[in-house]
Length: 376
Image 1: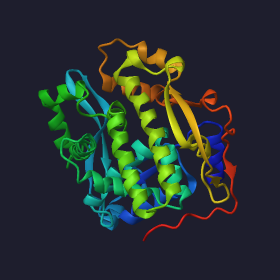
Image 2: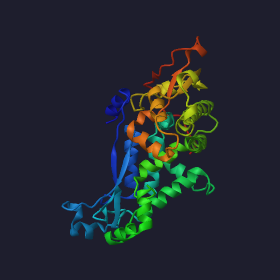
Image 3: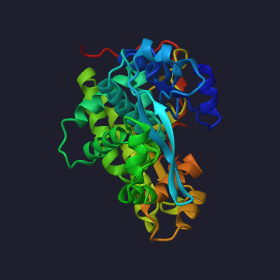
Image 4: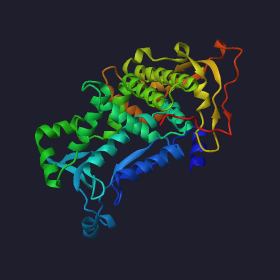
């Protein structure tokens, strides 16, 4: 599968593996191991996580399965699946199992939070070099996601990373009801139904909160890169190459985050080819980590000062500027997400004019690679 992932990367496409949270016999650790396989071993791109649905006619729906696995049964409305017919509010409802005898509800919520980081770091290509460097060092990307969660929990309540994750977990809990009747009664209330129509409830949480993060791309990037620095430096203290590579990765990410922020929040100041942002890197990080990392494919890190130019694609700029100025930003981000994922990604090109005497910056393959030693 890692070979297939490499071919997908080289073709400029995205893999989209899907995982189901809450399958019978699954535990917190087994779910994390599934994520480790997808991220660490395969290098999957855009991941999706689904809560186990109990569908009529399937083996998992039967009374026998319910008694055996002791599902924590809840009901929720499918995203935006509501309407009024003959003046009666109607809702499409699914029966789900956010936990069972081997996976507590607390563990379920924690795995949902881990997925939040995967969806907004691993699945956002501006963080690709960060993820691949952790894998290059022989590290565990999922362990870093757990570190992000730990650091987030120690932040001030009003700090964006803490606020957005708390809101996501709150909405994850509030979309679940103990019965179909309770759901229908709640959303049939005029006030709550109006919130459905306004998009305040009944939304796809993964897409909605990814959009919120994109609108705050700079704040999110500062949080992620600060955590990345601390995480790597604790494991690889006093190693000059590691320090310089990490700083190059951080710079590369922060400039791209600035492009994403300007793309949504300041549409009149979006970096274009002629007005590109520039950054100097001590290592040619974009080129070195362009390809996926696998056991037989390890790049050599060669110190080489380079300058890169960053800007948004011309068609992406035209598309977002075609919307009215009063378009709600969250709606705009959702539309772009569903239209073309590549619209979100800045273009970065090596500025050859800034270093005429430098090498071409292609990643060399090192068959004798061994991870750097790290502190226990």
